[in-house]
Length: 257
Image (tube, rainbow, N blue to C red):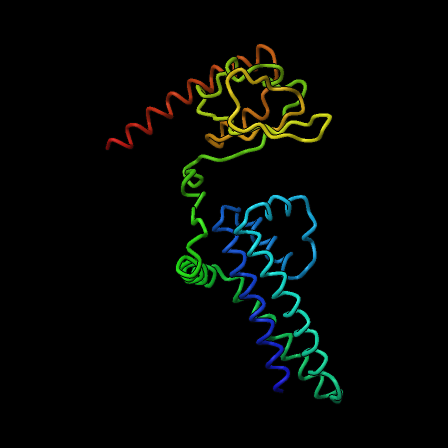
């Protein structure tokens, strides 16, 4: 029974370590989904070969977190496997079946606990507080709040197709700022590989195949991604400008009230 309890405690500790690692990565600016995936990948030693991992380890603080997760994961998984073997080694069928049922029930309880939104909020609160005190070098930014994601604004990737209204025009011609949309960057494939154009200037020409990183109202970004070239696209732009002016007026009224 002692080995079974040790196994359950080892699994619980592993889940807590992964959760701490995910929140630590999130505090460096990664989205919750990416941070969670990379923490699980690093701890388990599987899946951490994606192209996204190169972006993660380019940040010094994230690199330290990933290194620690890999180290703890290599020791933790080995301990869990060894304890699992010892739990059932030399046990009779009846005793082994009882241990297996206890283990399954424990795993179900752990799953319910660690997927509970209430528990998640509580854990995130205390883990963040601990990490802020223990590791002040982590930049604690809530990008969802900073960018107004919960207030109708969003960041979106728009792939420019040959028939897109955006294609073969400069940013100055497009006047996307009048629609309330900002182009933060452009991913472009070249002969030497993919390049990133950060904070593009007004004379930057948008080419078919470019991927635009845009910030603005969610509905406006969605409409822009579907806009086709021609008179129909120009009319859609004019309508989007009018909606942006109305939105700006409503926001000013709310801000002054």
